[in-house]
Amino acid sequence: MINTSGDNSIIATHKLLHSRIANPQSYSEIIGETSSGKSTIINGLFSKKILPSSAKPTTGAVTQLIIDNRLIKQEFIAINRDASIEIIDEKVFNLLVEKPDKNLLRLKTILPHPSQKYDGLNIFDTPGYNSLVTEHEEVLRNFIPECDVIIHVVGYRVGFGEQDQLLLSTVYEHIKNLDLDIPVILVVNRCPSGINLSSKRIIEIHNHAKDTLHKDLDVILVPSIIQEDLENPIDVLPEAKELWSSLFEIVNSNNRKEQLEEIGRARLLSLLNELSLNLEEKVALSELSKDDLEFLESEINEFIKTREKLFLILDKYTERWKRTLPKLLEKRISDLILSTTEIIQNDNKWLDSNACISYLETHQLPFNIRKITKEVNDYFKIQLEEMNKEMEDISNQALIKLSESIDYKPSKTYAEIINVLVNKIGLRLLGDTSKVLLKGFGGIGGVASGTGNLVKMGVSRFGKLFGKTFSRDVYNTIGRTFTKKMIARLNIAFMVFLEMGGYVYESKTWQKKLNKQIVTTLNEFKEEVTGEITLNTIENIKKSNIETINDVFLNLEMYATNEIHNLENNEEVKQLKGIENKIIKINKLKKEIVI
Figure 1 (cartoon, helix red, strand yellow):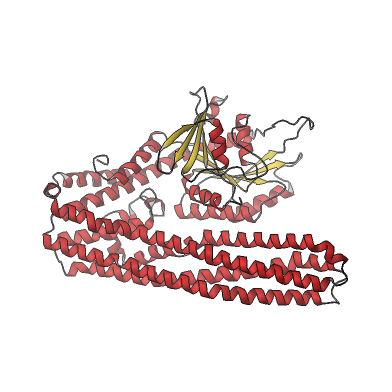
Figure 2 (figure 1 turned 90 degrees about the horizontal axis):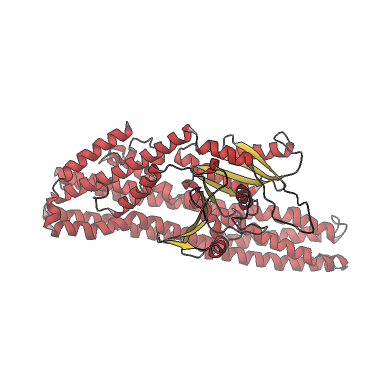
């Protein structure tokens, strides 16, 4: 029925789902900071260098490794954003792993393994979370919801740092939103000899991870690899047998298979919900008179005008931010310059310039820069909530008006059309069809279970959906990137102090020279931060909201201009014989899936 529906989006999603149900493999994803050793650990599974690895960021694309012992020779594949697939050679593969082009979606390599035990294992290597390349983080965050098992790698010496906390917080948010128990394994890599699970450092790392993830997780230690011959070094790879054995047990457990089946049923039910909505809509549309069709089209076009109102709200707020934030930064950084120069001039406090510079580096500047960054972040959050409230009100009013059009066209058929449209708008706000029922609706249909449910549940639900779409979800990821860039710029300022320390220390007039340098450095910092906010942060927030608004309204606009006209002018479509029977069959299938 799906394949004969004519809906290309549903057909394509169903093909992916059918493949997943027919071959229910778990997708295991390895995540962690840049240079924590993720790729090296994967290489250790194969006892040879499959992926590039070094101290610098090397993984720029999500790279899928599939163990298939039916193969004799390793295969290399590039999957592009337009869904095309290319067979590539090893040289091109290694180049794309480090520097993917804009067309690449992800890389895949299929290869045999000496042990039959790992046949069928599906592993995804991901870009480092604190990579200097911002796009790497976007790739990683977008991919987290697609995996079934997460392996988080932490370096023993580096420990569980701020970036690890941000990354596991992102994992927690996705797990919480999807309402699924996704297993997470914590790997502490490059552990010195004699370290075990009861070691103080390991307990500290474990506790930080538990607190961030809000649940316990298995911890596996991978020892450091020591080069025996330092004059002739070779690639020595960690075997990490405990990790791979643990992963194998998880992905092949009965509990995991049951979860995958449950996900498959939920996604199939979601597809059938959307298909039945589309078919019910066609039946109802075919029964409308020409006058009713024209009235429906005018009501939809009126609703679509809401998009322009939302754009005006967005423009109003972005212009406000561009005016207000430079002034805020000017005031705060000017205050910082004043307080810092006063500290430098305090003759009674410093024995020499070295002590002063050390205090500026370790306390005065980092503390105050973080304070300013927090103030900017807090300002954005408050502003976004205000903007969201305005968008909510406008959207709710438009939805109420669309629903109330039933009063002017009291026919049962017209009411069915409006109820179906409201449901479809709700589906679009929740996300694509493959995720609708994974957002806490318990596999019984929720919002998508039948026509009119959104109306029955009340328009406030629609507002909440808009609220979730327009508010903090958009800013959280952008805000983190902004904070990290600000701290990076502060580190550059530190380097300036270190470089200038020599001549300042030797000079008898060090305070005067240091004051001059601090004013120059902080003013440059202010210009960079202001540029980052106005050129990147604000524009990224605006872009994200434009995409969200268009996602809701563009399909509806196409529906108004294309589908209604097609039905109005196409006699063959108007007949639609047998669709009622299909709807009955689909509803029966939906009940069977739920049971």
